[in-house]
Length: 322
Image (cartoon, rainbow, N blue to C red; front, side):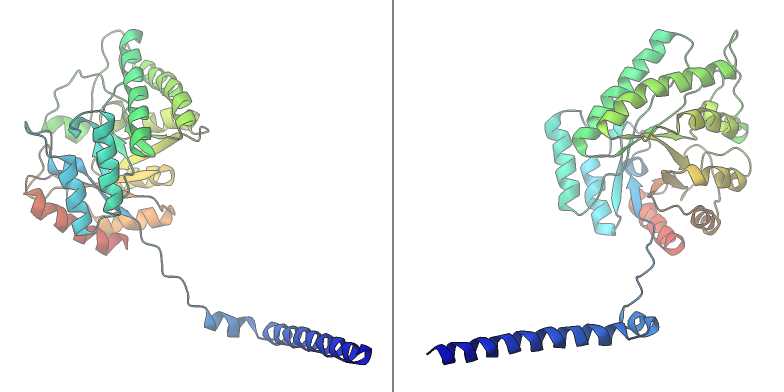
């Protein structure tokens, strides 16, 4: 009986040694393959395309009757967008059930909600007026948090000393209120953003300053505001392709390295405020050079039926941003 046990133990031991030796031999064989042979067996990853969103503004343009955000989400899913940017003023209300409905609808349709676009102005001489817009921003940070939106579009604001007509959009010139200077407004913006960034950092929300006319028509001013705040992880920039005075491409090239997200305008049927013929192949090339990987969000600002113009815009963007 003792001899049988010893023979069996020896057999098990031999079997274990054989398995171990075979495994080591296999590993050595694989190790002996050249890197080229191994690489041939692993397919190269497909180039990552820039994700495309659509702004709810593309369907509304501040007309008397609001276009439902829900319909934009459903249409975006049907067309094949990756996300929907929500315009705050287009929301039906700010109740938690409504916001949860939008978040759930987007999730069920496989869409992200990359940005909440709000309106505020820090170009206001009275501290109490700036405070109101700071409080408005803080409220919107809470709204974005509730909806799972990681980024808020922000403005600098403007003096409002010039009528917003065709001439304004051509030169962007707007004189300060008497007794103040643009340098005053730049300081107000930096200080007000600073207050908002404290709450944004806690909430994990990015505040993306936009070249949105007013003070930010001047790209030097925009960067003068952005750069002192850029050390905050909550500070970002939204670059709008349609909001440049003069030749847009050199200015776009200056801002592209700072872009967190890009709003890209189209004007099918003629623009509501002005017309631009933008070269999106050039825009896409500039973004690639800047190594931009974020969202491009469509703002269709033309008069054509959005049910026609939005798909046209998406087709164009797929061609150039893929």
